[in-house]
Length: 342
Ligand code: C5P
Image (cartoon, rainbow, N blue to C red; front, side, top):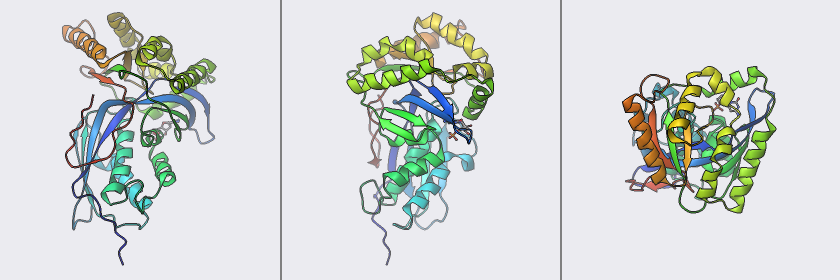
């Protein structure tokens, strides 16, 4: 007898948000070479969109990607995520082939974890498409999902948490944090058109032999504590200077992409605000009390790029976007996705 639960009637549609590291402390190294981290991570309104629909009678999954180029489909983390979902389903349901459409709005290899977010959304979305949504009979459960996420990549477990979180270990220890209070903080993202592989940045960091920086860890722990106590957008924006400096990978990224240092300085002069780097870069972020403030800053940057008074490193003009920190990740939805992304 088949144990197949009934899946949704329409496609499962998810927004897969970008993430920002407000802090990133490298606190040690594991024997296998992975670095131990302490990071406050937040999801952004900027998101990829993924839809998964059952392909009746077909044997192989199909992936169609639009937007930012993400390399050959076979290398897409979404393909591996669906394989992990099949393994996690473990015979609790039939797992027919899926047609997956992925709209990439997040720049790739940019420090925004777009690929990891797509993978988390695909893992969860595939299970839902097969009738194994969280909390239903046959749901493989949180621990199995978390282990699968960690196998897919260090940033993937964060996206299962559903909001801001303190991330430790290699990325697999995720402790949810309360959202920033009040108006969602605005974020200006400026991503030079350069591919900066995370592995290269960590390798340069390791080779440089810099010992763990206790100050970054303290800033990271302090921010996590402040969020737990209830921090609002304005007070978060007041901390932009301290947060912009609290990334232990800044030096390694600068060695790999020397032009990024001058670009960061030029942005500081243009906007008069501290400029941070998300994760291993090259995305730079600027924190504002509201989305409207970030939009005004985006216009300033776009005009300066058009006028040639600001020139980014890399091939072509940087990607510039005003977005905001979101309190919670968008939940599952089926069918047409009509949610606002602000
Ligand atoms: O886990 P993920 O495949 O996303 O990591 C990419 C690379 O970045 C790893 O192979 C490793 O070189 C480096 N990394 C690290 N420590 C982490 C996360 C990533 O050294 N915590």
